[in-house]
Amino acid sequence: MAIQLSFACSLRIGEVLGLQWKNVFISDEDIEKDNAHIVVEQQLQRLSKKGIDELNVQDILYTFPSAMDNENNTTVLVLRKPKTQSSIRTIWLPNTLAQFLREWKEQQNEYKEFFQDEYHDYDMVLCFEDGRPVEHNIIRKGLAKVSEEAGLPPVVFHSLRHSSTTYKLKLNHGDIKATQGDTGHAQADMVTDLYSHILDEDRKVNAQKFDESFYQNNDEDNANRKKDSIDVDKLVASLKDNPDLLDKLLDALK
Image 1: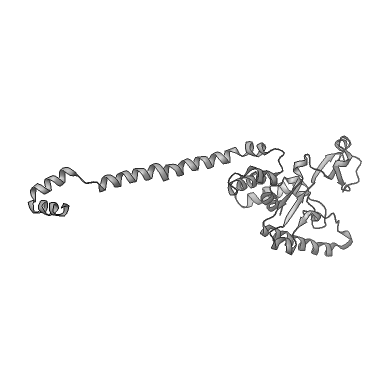
Image 2: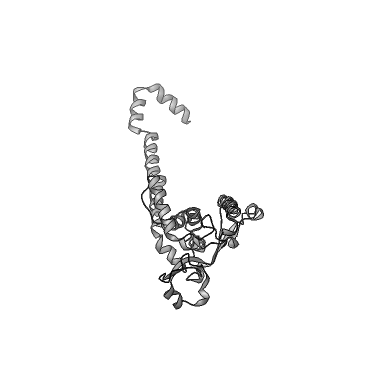
């Protein structure tokens, strides 16, 4: 599910892991009207306790209780606001992914029923069976394992976000603003700069298509014209050798 969300929605890993069900809209009506969507307004991050002290207290939305009562534990897991205002955004879901999320929610409800009071209900979309939030390292290790088992080259999780942006630019024929709305980049030129090589590839394809449709067709047309053109010298020689043919030609021209 982490892979699906990152690829379809152009999400950063912290945004995927910080997504809560309160920000997922996948009702029957939403799906029927192609309005299934998520609202990205927070991210999951592990911070040093010293780092938290340096942050604006309003940036921390929730601090998860530590799994270990250890005085030496110097970090804490939090839900925090994104670093930039542009990262707070609405992203529309493919209906297929919306259906996947509904099935995912049903599985979580079964785990809730199984664990009962031992379930940690933080309303997280991505979580362990008992509701505890999933951290970055778990997803990265999982992706590495899946890639290895599938015989694929190792990739970083963030590459899914890059691939998502690439496909969207191709599907919408380079609509930078529409793509930026999903990625949450602060400036449109950040998308342009990051993915300009994609547009360059399309321009190369345009040059190849131009060559095929214009230059090569012109060569074929010229060849056909030469093939269909009358060889005057041969015609005169034929008429000299065949007086009857000349008479018929003269009669036709009268």
